Length: 306
Image 1 (tube, rainbow, N blue to C red):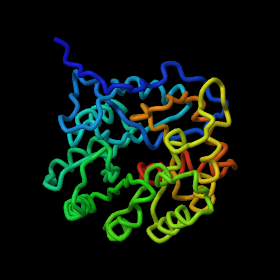
Image 2: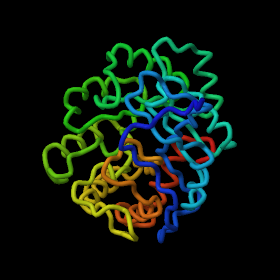
Image 3: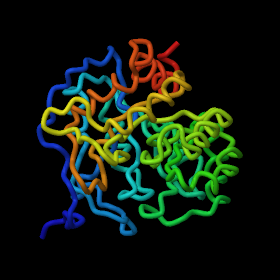
């Protein structure tokens, strides 16, 4: 009997043959947000998961890294694996120092378990506040986790919807570790980059000192066009949002592919064309060097970035 579970109906598999990007990233570039899914036969998905993806293992991730001209990865624990970080740790160890990780842990995690994750390359934990993906966790539990990881020099990655930021902002500002915000804080791009919602987000970033991933335009775009069929000016409605963040916080921005692009429903982007989105949001060589190399190295490989 097969041990591979049935995938979520309508699930879009990752692009099987991404194009070669026209944009050549600077040497040492980092994909600072990506995932591994299974393979389920070796790394079963969590029973409490909200979705069951197509397998997307470390071999496919590292092949994409090389195809896009990147050098390193930051692999973020996928919610479908819950708090079992086995697939993540396996990928980190196979990367031979070319990957770092962001794990998911419970409040009862022990110092020994954290040291095990640290030795594999984990440098942060993710707090997910997107209601359709996870059940809500009490802030007391999350604060306990933050306090436990602080001595290791780790950070917290925050995933939330823009409309929910006001409700969580006080808690975020109180965390005793650095914070990194996923996917531009998931703005509603139909409201415009000069609107009060995004202005509030920029103010939060300024006050908190947060890092921001200018990633996932395919997840945020309302009008496209999608990164398919040779389109090298994709997701035009997201560009002004990302540019504002890159210009305002040039030393605290990160970028990632989000491969294998979980929970997309409209289309599956060509990752080569996603790479061509980068020079549209980081328009100078200095901005691209900071976004793709200097910033992720300083956050995830500080010993090598000096």
